[in-house]
Length: 188
Image 1 (cartoon, rainbow, N blue to C red):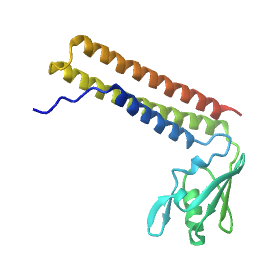
Image 2: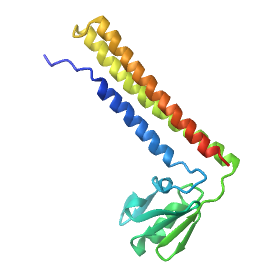
Image 3: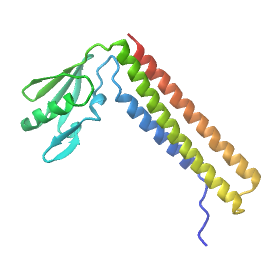
Image 4: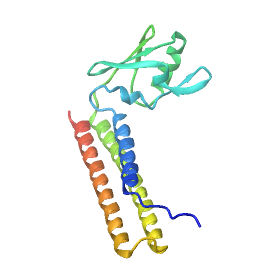
């Protein structure tokens, strides 16, 4: 008979932290009033017969608060990079000089800010769902251990309580990150 699956609270917390790390990365890709090179992270470029991230064909820097500079490494890639930026639905208009593409960030309208807040809320809900999935997995392991008589009812209840507390803590952290991002987006 196989050994029972062990309950590991640290593994559950680590998996919940991974969901939060992913959420933080998603939030960085949202454009606020200031230039941030991470907003270009989702852009994929058709290069050398394959699709690859923009970061693999160019260097992205922020020389000014409302300007992003994209230094394309290979001159033949300037047009595909420019096309990928234009088609990215980020509302950016590339201005190309040689191998440097400059992206001036327009001021955001109130409507655009509200749309970004909705996107941030969706990212937060996705992160909460991921945390809840980890909680469910942890509680399933605990219940199976209890059912198979590898864990007492008291230990099972205690461990389930620990998993719930970890879940509440991580969901609270997601809410705090969301509130901070919402405030950042809505600042005029």
